[in-house]
Image (cartoon, rainbow, N blue to C red; front, side):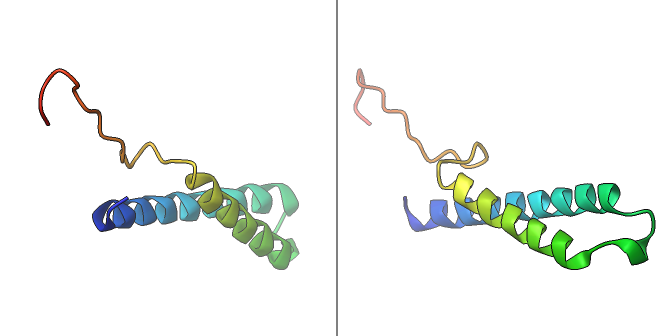
Length: 78
């Protein structure tokens, strides 16, 4: 993977990670409490961070937003 693809992958992985963290936090806040003062913020934060880490690790397998595969046509010179 060249430098430009690496930057595209990193940007896409971080955007996906932040979205995952936000979705996790919203889900836990919505199911955990009736009021803002009753939310266990440490649990919400740690679960969101863990979800972000898992998202980045999952992105190592590949991201559909970053197409780093190049299809070669074997019938013509590339």
